[in-house]
Amino acid sequence: MFSLSQLVTLSDGWPRRLIAFCGGAVGALALAPVNFFPAFAIPMIISVWLLDGAAGVSTWTMLKRSAGAGWWLGFGYFVAGLWWLGVAFFADGDRFAWALPLGVLGLPALLAFFTAAGFVFARLLWSPGPSRAFALATGLAASEWLRGVVLTGFPWNDFGMILGGNLYLAQTASIWGLYGLTTLSVLIFASPALFLDQDRRFVPVAAIVALGLLGLFGVLRLSAPGVDVKGARLRLIQPNIAIDDFRADRKSQLLEKYLSLSDRATSPETNGVGDITHLFWPESSFPFILSRDGATLSLLGARLQNAILLTGAARAEGNGQKAKYFNSIQVIYGGEIKETYDKIHLVPFGEYLPLGDLLSRLGITQFVAIPGGFDSGRSSRLLTAPGVPPILPLICYESIFPQEIANRINSQTLRPGLMLNVTNDGWFGNTSGPYQHFAQARLRAVEQGLPLIRVANTGISAIIDPYGRTIASAPLGVEAVIDGPLPKSLSPTLFSRYPNAIPFILWLFVAFVSLRGRRRV
Image 1: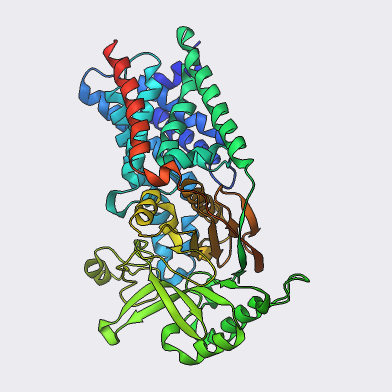
Image 2: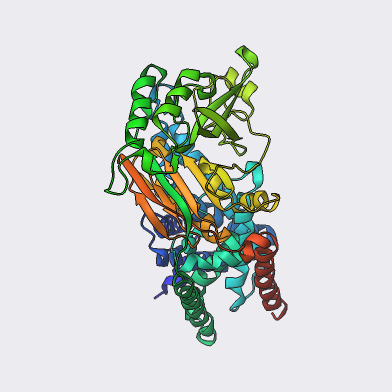
């Protein structure tokens, strides 16, 4: 009777593809909101066995079988992890429902080519013995990094989030960031495949020890007490406004809802907006151009008293067909816009249309109802506001790019004292997507040693300290007012200082072990 490993290794054709697909899909259980990280062992163990069975009569056959197995495993992982994207196509069903298969199946199919490339790279380093796990980690870590940078990048649900989604296991991201966690995630969870090798059981045992050491480091780091910035009293508004209600003809109602929530009494110490210093509203809070609406700015100045408002807002430059629109964060007090940051890393097909001239002729448009979509901002500047340290602004999915954020921080004269992430995940309803977005944003706080203020229209909004601990939050899908202090930042982490070098050195070490194993054969 064949063992399970032999069954997978010797499989071929559609049974082999089905094993790979199902294995990848099970791996998505390790992601938010389930966060059952041991589930990632299933696709990684299967990956080792599939690559063991990729040997063929020629190098071409071997690489083709490796790529095929990797593509199907990646396809299963991304379909199971990104199915929620389909919900956005029903937000404006008359315009976008036809494209549902492209989001739910088309994008995962494209992303799976990166996993296929990782399998090919791993197979080129393959050799019998314990170095197989190192070869797989080398190949998949490289392909996941490429997924995060090619064609503006899409590192959503990077394999590093398997460890990064658990706050204790995520703490070493302060050393080597998301991509260091990627290397370790693959290496640790692929190692049990070697347990059947009688003379190599030390490798999975070592992997278990390594996982325990990661957890121990997390326990020790999270035992540190938090310190708050003196005098800062924050209020985050989660209005929970449906996408259908975000219309210009509802301007008055929406504005009144924001103002009423902002002035709500939440405790004996906080009777309203007069008792807070800084107020935060989510991405694109207004269905109009705030900077061109003097009456609304005057109203904000009167109703918000001395509170400083930091809010998402659309911004325009110019008029008519030559107008440019930006997705922005604006700092407002005294009835005036004092500072503005324009989003730099836009969402393809969501905020702008790649190959816009060609696709627009075919009747295809971006999701946001702005002619031509948003334009990209030109400056990665920090925002400043009285009473708080310099602010690194992040709009929507700008929060999922660890290297970009680190490079932006290191390009500044002054280090920021907090990160502000405004977003609107209402497009995706009560699905896995907002939980995954929150988990990835939280990891940025751990990497940088900076507190994170996250304000989301429908959730998840939170004040997060520089260790990734949630100080105050509101769940998904509810209207909420969140009051809390501003946690103080830590000294720059190792990853913050060397965001490219340290994860690369870790990857080089794993690649070196893999190459040594191959040379011994």
